[in-house]
Amino acid sequence: MIPDKKKDKIASILAIATIIIIGVVIALRFDTIRSLIIEKIIDRNSDDDNEEYYQDSEIEVDDNSNNGDIDLSSDGNVLNIYCWNDEFARRLKDHYPDFVPNDPDDATAGGKIGDIDVIFTVTSSVDNGYQNNLDTVLPENVNATADAKVDIFLVEADYALKYVDSEFTIPISDLGITDDELANQYQYTKDIATDSNENLKGVSWQGCPGVLIYNREAAKEVLGSDDPATVQEAVKDWDTFNETAGKMKDAGYKITATANDTFRVFSDNVSSPWVVDGKIVIDDNIKKWVDMSKEQVDAGYTGTGDLWGDDWYAGFYPEGRVFCYFGPAWLIDFCMAADDEASIAYAGGWGATTGPQGFSWGGTWICAANGTDNPALVADIMRKLTTDTEIMTGIVKDDNDFVNNKPAMEAMAADTSYGDAVLGGQNPLDMFCKGAEMIDRSNMTKYDQGCIESFQEIMTYYFEGYYDSYENALIDFYGSVIEKYPELTY
Image 1: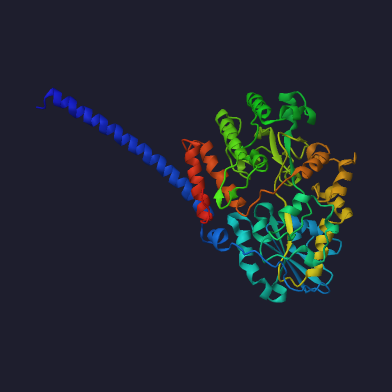
Image 2: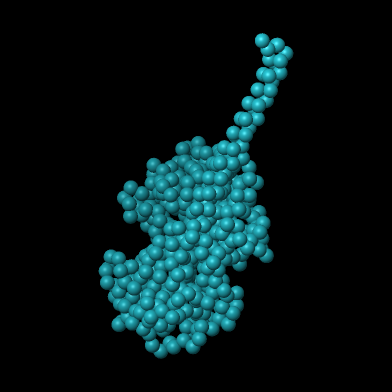
């Protein structure tokens, strides 16, 4: 028989051991969750193809910026255009005067410009597929057979520098396009496509200043009016925005579909790049987004779904109960389900106002591929779609896109007959014009896409409670970025 004192001692030992085991299990569980998060992100961003994108395919700067003598007097037989969707194909089909489509309903089916066949190669951006394809074909383009050469390829803002600051793009001046011809374009669109030797390497037909896009029915119910001035007063700064978020929750609405909806507003107003002298930097404004978003998620003001995910799309419909989105003109007319009779957009149920801060999001740039055998045609397409005021005005009227042409946009902003059906006939262009003049993208780096993707994903897990602190989440963010860019530190 065990003495009582010994029993008590054994019981104490067992109790302590139990506490230790429970602690170990909890720690292991946290580490397992953390490991799964990182494994998921690394698997998504660092498979064999993506490692080539993030590491091996770092493109050397074209030091002399001269791709040789370009013959602008003649063109080849095939114009090859590489893109990730049908946006540019539709602009070419609908607005380039000499384009004859093969299929009037499918712009990516190509067509003819005079005797030249136009062929689109469309590769989805999912899992970095589009860039991986470019990274395969562009290095061989100079030596490719004439009909196989890439002539035009499109790039987005987040990764534009990767191609702009490389030998794979031709300076616009080498195509005979002058600074005077580009004088009406918004400066930030030129800054994004300018390489480290001050050569402009791409042009865009669109500008992408953003606004706050609000649900008119929710505004009338909660704020008493859907007038843009009334709504602006309720979202004029982030403190007021959060107060309005509480009111929206009380009425059964989320202020935004997801915390990620506000990210671009904060990230476009930073004072420091993501990387400075090889070191990853978290700007104060990015940290403000984290703090605000964590507070909103915890309070039930917003969700944590992915942009472009089902939860995000749900707010485009009345039953989604979402008050607002943040975005440029392309989001309003091309992404909010305006063709679906059940959507808010179809009924003209959205409005636009400036919001807490100005910002920009996205944009598409036309680049001429080094090795093109159609330089004269490429130059003409660039001129007509990005410098011709009449054609660009047509893009605004037909497509409700905000174009990269100041005279065209200022005239349309003053046109009382113009209105956007998605916005209930409201003309938002004056807001867009003022926003475009204020955009500053001087803090862009070639690391932006990788940093942004990892930060939003890791912080979403933090908002959802998978990390016990911002600091622990940040450690894994650094690890994820360094997986992509081993040359960086933090």
